[in-house]
Image (tube, rainbow, N blue to C red):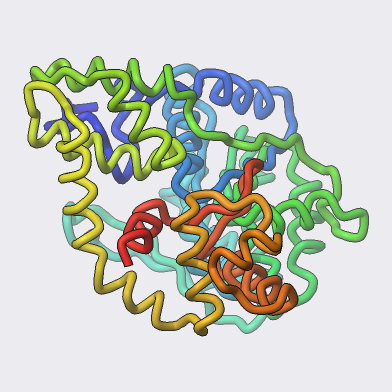
Length: 374
């Protein structure tokens, strides 16, 4: 990897040097895959789930280059057809030998798709395209898995935001996928997702096809001391001292969520004060929250009055263990318990709030700060 201008990356994976900790999780994921077991990886959004997958695949590329690793994101998919397209774009054409490429093996193998070669707009090199010409994505799914199986190559496939399949209009997607997964002994899977209740239903319910078919890893935030040492070391390269008490205040305020922490650290590295103060952190937060003001106002305006009041109350409390308690209801002049329960269910489902082990928090840590200022 080339050297970065700013070591606190906010998007993408820049290499092991810029990746903080996750040593235990990395080793556990690699060991599980190597030993022929599939994995369910769960965490809230913006804790670092996708980064961990990319880090694991990067480590494998160095130690076991013959293994093929694929990453598929289902976040924007809404049907089985969308899933097939995303999986096909990532996998098709990546497992052919040079001779098979010359003989057009892929074009012959897939009968339900129209495959074509077109020049890459940036490099000019031939690029494989995939165009479904059938109304039967089930057949194409079977062809993709047969392609994986017949390659004989060891493959690791990470399917991110896997819980999306629960909302597909087709009712047999889980059974179809489970059947194909069982028929691919050379392919291991990481099923990752951020909606933990949906992921739990898919893999823990005896009535669901994926019941107890995987190992399970729940990703938590990076430990505070480990994160502090990482941040302190990199800020020192810019001539900036980071007092531990200031870092602790930021970590506590953002609950240690990686993406939010990285945003703050990225800006501190950019401005490189001689020593980070709480005023420097506040200035960073002010800048970020102000930039998001229009979007937060739009999100907030979509809520009913009850939902808005409860969301703002949770933000002001920072964490709420019992949102239906008499004390909480009285303090914020909330309606009847039944109305509060309905609002909590809605806010949780739409990911305005998130139930941690300690209680409910506002999911978006920067939005929580914005709400506290209303």
